[in-house]
Length: 362
Image 1 (cartoon, helix red, strand yellow):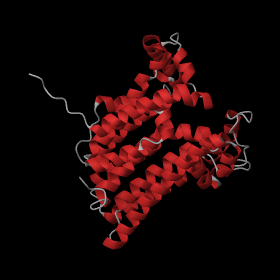
Image 2 (cartoon, rainbow, N blue to C red; image 1 turned 120 degrees about the vertical axis):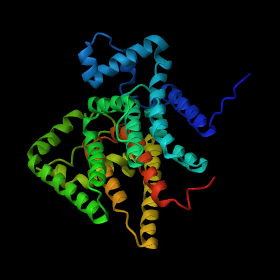
Image 3 (cartoon, rainbow, N blue to C red; image 1 turned 90 degrees about the vertical axis):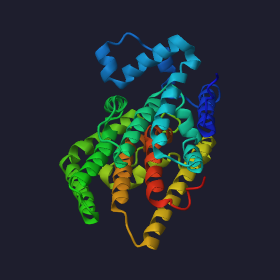
Image 4 (spheres, rainbow, N blue to C red; image 1 turned 180 degrees about the horizontal axis):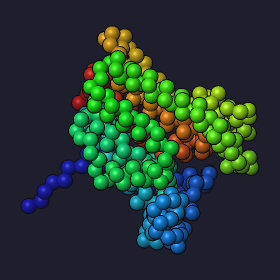
């Protein structure tokens, strides 16, 4: 007796698309620009010690890439990394309990070319999509009051977060602390607002205390970007003391957006990335407009949602901007580490609290 296997057509199509992006990146995109350190990972280096592999993201990638390439070859060696990023997305999205219509649209948002390419080949970005996706799934379960104790795979994700992108832990830990304190203290609207204000005050005090260290680190960043590289911008953003704070709003925006219109005119290959960022931004503006409209029509403001969105967006963009503001290529590449997390987390909040009528079809 055969047992029928039911395959969701949206997830299957998404998987095939990611497989396409993997081959497209290797055989087409690589001819237009470099694929980061993918070639290095595929050459591999199995000489590192176990302690180095477990504590250093670059050496871990050397080891994992070397093993994958040795077993599957330099092309299919990218496949396990594509699978990891796919699973990270599935782990978080599957917890949203979406209708088919909603699932279709969130997978569309997660199918844009830049994200598709960088998350489907061997690289730290694919790893980032995996562990940030798993962490997002855990946050959703916490918000749904399903559980608070993390599973083993989530503990592994937190470990990878600290190895690869410890700066992102500020956003994740801030959100978790906000959620747990809100529930532990049984806070109502004004209590949650006070907690948000307290978070802002603590962040401001932290910036003030460590202002000189952050200032010095900002002046060190341009040394990591060569002006001989085709897309690297001249450093005009960190010229005077504490520019890292004064220019943060613009820096956070352009580091997320990527190429400017002027850069597209000089280098047309950036046009697709520019359009992609514009579409993402317009979609984001649409959702913000819908939320504001909901607040106006219902005469109720959801402090929890405002707090979670503000904390997540601010910290992720702030810690990302020093790495993306000087080079549009780096901006797009590093953005992919948290783009999936951001999309799923914001989509979850929107669907749960504001989409009673529009995104609830089928």
